[in-house]
Image 1 (cartoon, rainbow, N blue to C red):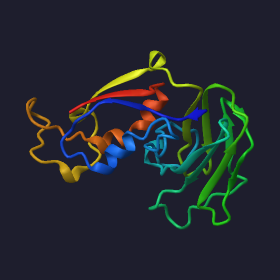
Image 2 (image 1 turned 90 degrees about the horizontal axis):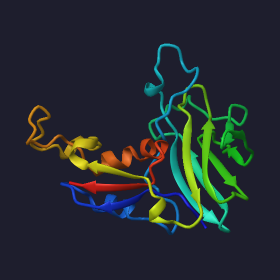
Image 3 (image 1 turned 135 degrees about the vertical axis):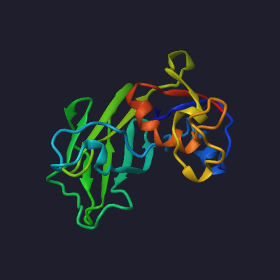
Length: 207
């Protein structure tokens, strides 16, 4: 069976919305749909812009068929300008560093549909380069039975990790050690791709 996942251990944080908890705990029965895209560097790009200022593709859906077939849909971000269109000619797909077929651009030029079949047991790294004005999209999939003994655990002090939702920043003062620093569950969700790039497949969360 194929699983793409980052497991969650522990819990608790101020201002945790229920949907976030459900998304974080959605493990084992499919893909962990937390990450939109990994923050990775890119070669080339629009002059005058750094790679981090470029928009990135987002993961819209993913599922497992037949135990070793990975289907996923990747889309342009909702705020992408109408002038930004995807094309099959610009799409470059690699799996584990090798060129791979199985991904097609939708007719409207806003989405990419991928069907990757016959995946062997183990970790696989997917990379999509879709347009010069987009950061590359990366996802890692782990095929095979889950075993905690093989987990790479990343310990996160939620409040000190990343501020993903400024609307819940009450009494935040990063200059004071005893005050809240603004980190939240949305910040963890936003950085799942970064953790996956590090090889992390389990996170231990504290408030």
